[in-house]
Length: 433
Image 1 (cartoon, rainbow, N blue to C red):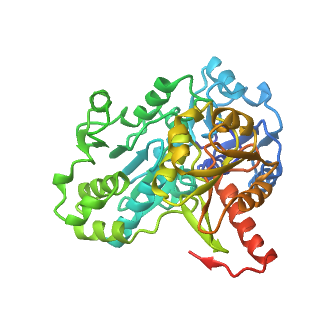
Image 2 (cartoon, rainbow, N blue to C red):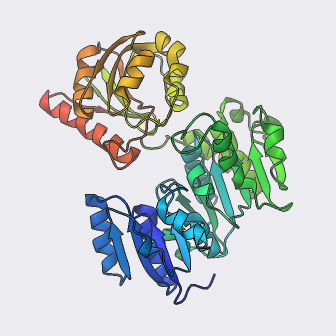
Image 3 (spheres, rainbow, N blue to C red):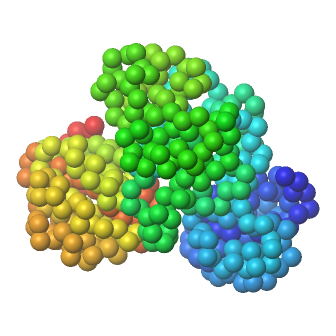
């Protein structure tokens, strides 16, 4: 892709948008940026980019003049397809691509792309750890919080790119073609953006769209949609649920995320012992069932990454003690009733906060004692008052974070700070986990 002196508009001034703008500047494009939101973060990012000789930056609105005369529009993942700048560009025949597509155009290394509703961050992290343990050069990036456009400038032919990719990012691909494409699972999520579940599934399946016979497609043989998935790719198909591939007996106790990571590593001839050792010693990722502390025999667990009902359901399934659940945030048109049976088994009480608290209370509040809170700090304090020694206090929101926080990571960090502040206020000795 030749970008020198081309006029390129970046839509979105978040982490990915900033990285895309910087990459475009390195390629000597004439870059401008628009973001309909005006916040402290967008203002800070705008100030940073103004130092890079960006042509024009517009925040707090979208105006059509920003699109006029552009040669290319690059969209950030959080920007919906019906956003005005993208509509204006398409109506004028201006090409629109996503940040992932832009990075892929300049990537000299093979790409392992991992998607799914839940587990993709864990599998992406695991695959990266396995490659490093095998002394193989790899770059872990994408939806995991490290933009592909930020990292691509450091990637050489002898690297492997381990890329977490979302349905939002897959919506805008053109030629993106992973050497290995993994779909872990697809359950109801992001129905506030996709018209229905079938459209969400179609977006996920675009990961296979440009693959050829020399590539690999990996998903579960236990998935009811396996035949439909296999028809969407020309690549060779592997099932990560096929345990006959592995000789190490420890794999019999591995969950599907670990098996998917092992299957990926086997394609690249990484010794099975190396891969299994990494999985066996893996401690998990931040904000996913992360045990923060024990205070007065109450165990605080940060599961801020549980942004959908299915993810929270999994968290409840693996915790055995009585639970006081903290949930809420921005609704993604989720069906919270799906969790009713598990709530009756595990929950002692529930504290709800954020935009979705009323909807969740209407769906589940008849099952357990439920209170509401104005913010996360009040929710934690109320949860403590409802818990007994030995209980878990679990933040597993079932919702997006954007009503109160920049992302789930920010929400998780605030939760952990509240827990540690609580220990100081009560002069309790914190037992870190």
